[in-house]
Length: 475
View 1 (cartoon, rainbow, N blue to C red):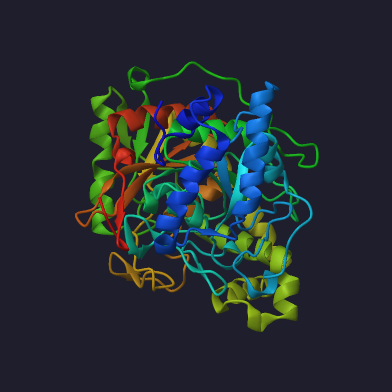
View 2: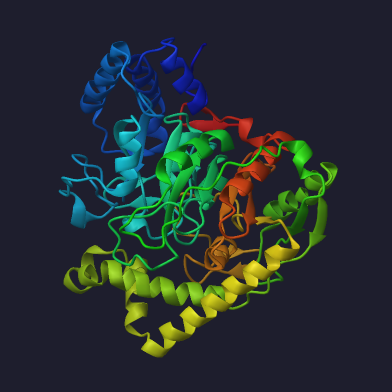
């Protein structure tokens, strides 16, 4: 079996198990690619290749000894730079954390390393993961492998760019308002926001909060499902964590026959969508209908979802970062500081009303998915934009007043409490990737992956790779 930097994670792992390649050779393959391409995209930070080579050598020794190994044994891996990994810096793009080297790993990193992955470093993030464009004053801007003048999205932008550029085969991320989905759409990879509780987060300053979840990213759904199987499952410290889902028979394309598909470009007009994105969204109905699905224009009625999100997001930012904002406000980017200060203006009544409204929205979602099996909609409202911008100036002619205004298509789905996946759907006339967002009922994560896997077969846009040459990329 011949392995290259765009082989699937499952192919790499099969080659490791059959000893067609060693963990050290696989690491060398990736480090060569990193040396070639990472200076252009700036996706990976805090690399420790000496430590990675030692870990890979130990993995090879374990393989030679014939002892049992984990499902990711010998696979190079880089963690999101907001996730603590023992002995690696967690900088989170902030000058406040440049010397922060945690002694212990958080739960998601514990699970991935226990599965045998070889940690090589971290993936870049916006400052404290605030925003869906990855830039910060410590490591700089992460760019898009399909056009390095454009944004890779965020906050898991380093992860998505690294996947798209062939620097890693799997990546972890987190998502509040679209941070697993927007960068996946921008970089032509797959990102899943699981049902809250599917991937428990620990440590966690607000374990009851369902806005924030961690999750997997990959270049295809099969690989994403593999990583999900490693990082999901209950943890006693997170009372809302979910048990593992029972495996169901694979749907395949034939299984889409009779699937009840709702499609909506803008959730009943609650957000604008740029024309190139809408054009690709409008193709989705015919793709599903050609496979025998029953397609209807429909969407849950959630006009208050953005208000709920903004209110509860400000509260969560206050919980996580309020002390830093009070102590060193000058060391936080202005838009992040403003988010935290919004919470200072909230009353207990504001928060209570938002929580009650969130519960009502989630009840509406449950009712909606008694009539439909999935909802298909845009991931992002815009194409990947210029990397020098903090956020787009406008969407379809409507001015963006802050960096959330272009993310409404993702953040509203967060409030639904449903699993949602971004899958590559096509390219603009300029060759920029666009993903489709597929949403399922709460708890139906594996069903959602099955639908997404069948969609990949119908529309294999994710197989189109960038060609990074002399700082430029062309599809």
